[in-house]
Length: 384
Image 1 (tube, rainbow, N blue to C red):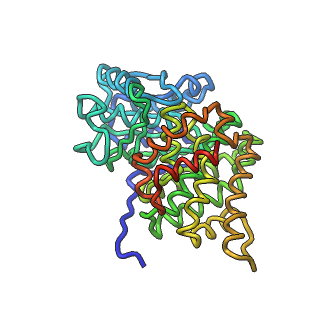
Image 2: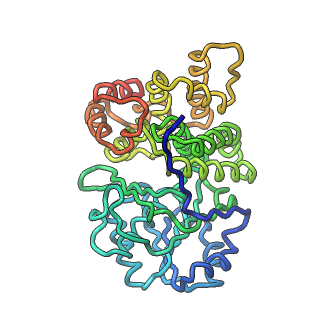
């Protein structure tokens, strides 16, 4: 029995098909007057911003739309957005998009509220006080950033992904509207869905797991195992899209309290150096990362396998675990994702550098098995 654990959910979560166009009453509760929207060109081009703008205009003035967020956002882009939000006199940040716009918006509100440079607040619990209110509206069923106290921003000067973590970073309101995810292309649907799965799996085996995060994580794994294929293969399937949004949000709540592990440490290193999509990177590392950790917490991987739909009856734990890991790998393959680092253009000679970077990434400190640099290199070689 655990002697102590802590669990907190600081975000009000609202779910409804078509909710993005009905934000008026939600905004009024925040008392804001001047909204600054953070998004990307893809969201704008797909017409996903239109219902959000219509809903916002019922209650606030839209003083800016910052739509130049790249797929892997950067410190420089956050500073650019913060300057624009400050010049516009924004008192509300509305983030619409996937993980990059949501994390960029978190970075913008740090600088907008406190001034200075984003790098002044890098690390854990450095942010001094409450931030400008934020509404997070995800257009992918993946990152869970709409409910987490984390932001991951790339420092282009160092080729690193930097972590920002504080209870003040949690968005005030998360709006889950499956209609906004219908046009997400199959490959991005797959990658973001596997990202959510990696959150749930790593949270469940984390050294900081708790009964509350366990329940959320296992439910998220079950939902993803049953609905990701449908969301990828039939993008208009609103039920599948909605279940994936819910699963990603639940996994986000779980990892907000119980954190990540070796898979994310390697993924952060890979994204920072080689610019591989975060969800794709997590999908690549999951099988080898799961095998590495299953040695020390096999009972937890048996439960993960069951949540993935593996029949555990009458078989050894090792067989069930192997089938659970195989089910994760098969899900990625069925969704059309690459399975090897070489498939995404990663050169073998960069693997030692990735191992060294992952060894000092914050995510690895909550992994259930202590990893050496050589062991991380072995996982990388296995995945290459």
